[in-house]
Each structure stands twice: as structure tokens, then as C-alpha cells.
Length: 382
Image 1 (tube, one colour):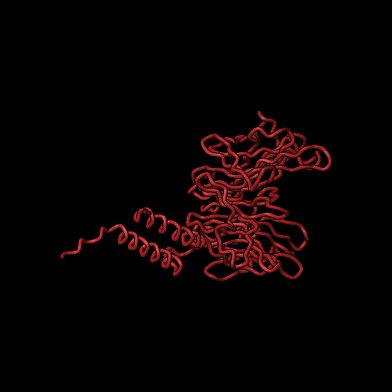
Image 2 (cartoon, rainbow, N blue to C red):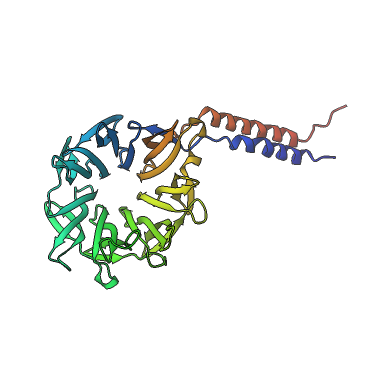
């Protein structure tokens, strides 16, 4: 005779698992700018900075409260956003009236050139308004060198290099509220096919540190792209073989507590790139998949395709993720029907959706049925 209790549990599992497999996605996808746009950063309040195509060029934008603002230019045809802070200040670069390029800051509804000695660009900004990037330092080495800098309160600071490891040139990419800067350093400015060697760097408490390349062979071009409030650093370690055809292989990394660890990719010999890390240690970026790329989320030791966390029925394909805040919102780029857009990924509401409610009701019903099947039959009285 079949045991009724065993049968009821087996029935419950068999019927409930398919329902659980239909759980709602984690993220919704919202386009925030016209086709051809891309997002570059997101702040704590869900504001997004990015760049959109316009007639004759491209313009940096700020998306805030459902409104898209064209940041404009410094007199030229194009501008590009790099990063932003929690006050909605955006930095990047813009062409000027004489067709040259200059670093800009957008603040209080106006765009202005970032003023400083021999600035090439500005790549990052913290909540105090301090910025970092790269500047030409004359009369150093063979007549001059590119160095990472910090510009805070009108004071320019040359962040230097790491001569002990052969790094003569440094480039700033991001800055946190403590004034710690990350980027990359190189023994030479350019030269050597197809790129020049470089290592990720960290400037902290007056000292610049070469973070290494996690054992990749000579010829690497590696860099750090972002730093959070607790000095976790993300970027990419890249290796190429000096033969034709050139083969690139790189992986996203997370540096913390003095250790640089690769985060993985979507498959063997496929590259990945880390764009940002929030204060919870969640990392986003993009990785090679087939002939294209997919955005990824790295958390709790898992490297996850962001497309596995959205509803496939929407038709969106997330190709890149460039920013993540502590609310888990993600800025990036997604494509649909042959067009690609700057997007924001928002967490699905915690309120149970009808499908979740149906799953719960079905599960409770099956548990009740199992309980009835386990209940012993009452003895009939004569």
C-alpha cells in the first residue's frame, strides 16, 4: 500500500516547484534617454548621468525625478559625462568653440570648465566637490609627465607616481569622500602594440600604491575604474599576446584588504570589465557573451548575468552596467528592437505580485491537503 504521508509530500513538492520557478524578476528596466544614449553613473538618490546623441554630436545629460536635462557643452558640438556625486553634480569633458576638449563640471543647472593647471580631463567627483583626472606636469622626467591629480577647494595636488615599480605616468579615474583616488599607472605614455602596459593604482593618505595585476604576464594593460567609501576598488586586469592576431583576455577584479581577486566571467577565456562598486560591495560591469556583451552583477561571490534578473518577456537585453548605488539601482545600457538606450534598473517592489500571491496560496492549499491526508480516519461508532 502506498503511504499517504509520503504521497502527499511528494505531491506538494512536485506541484510547488514549478510555481516557484515562475517567481517575479528582481529588476525592471526603464529607458531614461533617447535611442543611442548610454548611462555612465548613478548616485544615492537614483539620479543618472550619461550621454545622448544629438544632431551634430553628443551631449551629456542628467536624469532626475523623471526629467531628462541636456547639460549642453562648453561651446563646441559635443560633451560626454563621466561620473556624478549625490548632489547631482556631473563631471566629464566637452568640446569648446575652438574644437579642443576641456573638462567640465555641471552644477546648479549650469555647465562650466574645470579650472586647473594643464588639465587633460576630469573623471571623478566626490560629495565634497573634489575632482580627479589627469594633468600634464611639466619639468618632470623627460620634460614632463601625465600625473593623476586631485582638485579640492581650489587647491591642486599632484598625486605623483610609483617609481619603485617603474610607474612614471599616472591617471586618475575615481575619488571617494575620503579623497582616495584610483586609476592606473604606466612606465611610459603610449607606445608598444597594441596598448602600453599599465597597472591599477590607489592613492591614499598621501601615498600612491601599485595594486599589481594578479599575476598576468608582461604586456598587460590593467586599470582601476571605481572606489567606494570603504576603499574597495574595482577594475579590470587585462592580458594580450604580442602576436598576430592580438588576443585580449581580461577579467573584472575587486581589491580589498590588500588583496586583488578576479571576479570571473561568463565563460572560459571570455573577458569581463568592472564599472562600479557600491558601499555594500556589490559590483556591476559587462562581460563578453557570444558576439556581444551582457551586464553583470557580482555579489556574495556570485557572477550573475543581469538579464537573468529581468523579465525576458519585456524584450530588453542589458548589455552594460556602469553604476550601482546602495539601494541596488543600476545604471547602464540596454537594447530592444534594434535600438539601445541609457537605462536604470530598479528593484521590483517588495509588495507581493499576483503571481507571487498565487504561488503562496497554492502552496498553502497543498500544505492543507497534505495535513488532511496525514490525519488518521475516525473510528466509526456502532
